[in-house]
Amino acid sequence: MLKKQFLIYFMWFIALSSQAQDAIKTLNAEQVLALVREYHPIVKQTSIEIEKSKAEITVARGAFDPILSNYVASKTFSGTNYYNDFLPEIKIPTWYGIELSGGLENLTGNRLDPSSTAGKTSYLGVSIPLAKNLVIDKRRAFLQQAKIFNTMAEVEQRAIINDLLMSAVESYWNWVKAYQTFVVVRNNVEINQKRVEFVKKSFINGERAAIDTVEAVAQLQSFQYQQNQHWVEFQNAGLQLSAYLWKSNNEPYMLPETVIPQDGWENETNILNFNLILPDLLTLAENNHPDLRLYDFKLDVLGIDKKLKFQELLPKIDFRYNQLNKGFNFLETASAGPLFQNNFQYGLKMEVPLRFSQGRGEYKKAKLKIEETTLDQNQKKLQIALKVKSYYNEFLNLKAQIALQSNNYSNYQALVRAEETKLLNGESSLFLVNSRENKALDALEKLVELKTKYYKTIYSLQWSAGLLQ
Image (cartoon, rainbow, N blue to C red):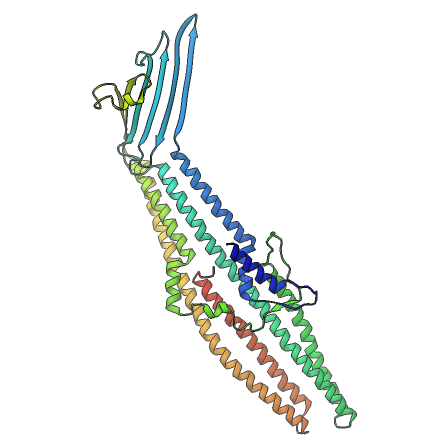
């Protein structure tokens, strides 16, 4: 864990720290995801929920803690000592519903209950449910459910992180798109600045008409306007991305203007390592998607509840037996001889509802809840499968569209170069060059949009299968 934190911190330090204010630093998708996993408040909140579920297990286990009790009582009235009672006892609940007990009695006085034994006695006892609560009772059910809820909290953390990382990476690729579009326009501004200088010199030399300088400047101003607009969009996209970047001290981190997407943004290591085979993704989603796993655990909890409700359909028959002994020597009590012959006390209590109306109603409700949850699970399973297939279709389409758009942009570039050559030879006009250049710019911006959408869709594929962790 320490090694992991060190690597993340080191990566963050390389990406964002700077010794000079104007230093340009880079950020990639892997770094963004690592920072979200490590420092985002929502991730930390899910960890708190896991710890709370562990505390609930401790609470449920408390029902099986041994209980030490003592009863002391005395009564004196009109000079007569009625009784002095001293009754310490320990009870030990067990997992199987059987309760063990042992205790001491010291009873003295002139008016004791005739059924009580005067003097010092001791006993070892057992209490056994013979029907209702024999297989399962509330104590065992709550502990089993608490353990399941703990596992559910861990799976729910996976589901939350899966959604959170997708939101973060979506903001990241929007940020990349905004920056790359800005760079495209900025490059065109630089080209047009050189073209304006060339046209001005040509005008001074008498080779161009004055209107050509107006044409060149108008084109430059158009690109400068777009450059300013795209710079603002890039900054706003950075603000959206900053919402997912936090420091280790729980303070938000605002992405500075000096941070840009890394070079080679089309070769993310994460993307190269992703599984993009549809049958594999569908299988992984069905077996491991956290949303579906949550339904499995919900059904487990409801199954325990169903078993508990079934106990309401059984008669309550409780048997209690105590082996008695004079004095406080438990060893003599344990070896007092055969049961039910001497020095014993027992009781058998039975309760039977004549119609079991409550039990039948509760048991039916438990079964209906299981049926309802199973239907929800099947529906969720279908929704996830359809979502995976939908993103996969989009992935294939974008892949083909990028290849087509790349050829389209190459063709426009060739037209621009050809028109520029003709312009230099006096066979074309600046208007035609600008027209070709605008078409090429539109094609390149569309290509950037398709590529960022393509990479975003690859992450969406992983997200839809529940694999972003």
